[in-house]
Image (tube, rainbow, N blue to C red; front, side):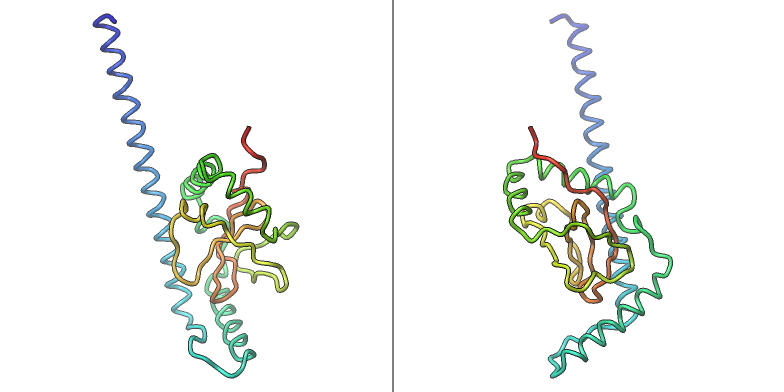
Length: 188
């Protein structure tokens, strides 16, 4: 290798390293934006009241309090839309993490888990609306959850078709939806 080749090789390594660091920083920034957006939502929800946390003799009372809180949150988020939480660059971070999860060593396990769970297809969820009664809540495989940012108590990731849903279990409201987040086919 000539001296000029070594210089080009070193320059290429510097550029690759810089790009890698920039991508890592962008991912950290997106993760922080996600955490901030979720914290803002939780603060808004909690400012509207709390769901029943102590035991009660009536399921109807618990349901009524949950629906009342949901109505207050819905009114406080009257202008909520898709992408309020999963907007750019957060959506890109999630798509990357999900793609890496499916392509990695746990990918076959994630796919098997999704096939064996009670898959939910054919419903179109909307932000700020209640998750439909009687429709199963497909859990998100643990091996996929390990690669996604942690979320606050009372919020869960759910999979509906190919969409990733952020669901508030305290109010049964859809907080946000990331469309087509789940890959369609097995890797070749």
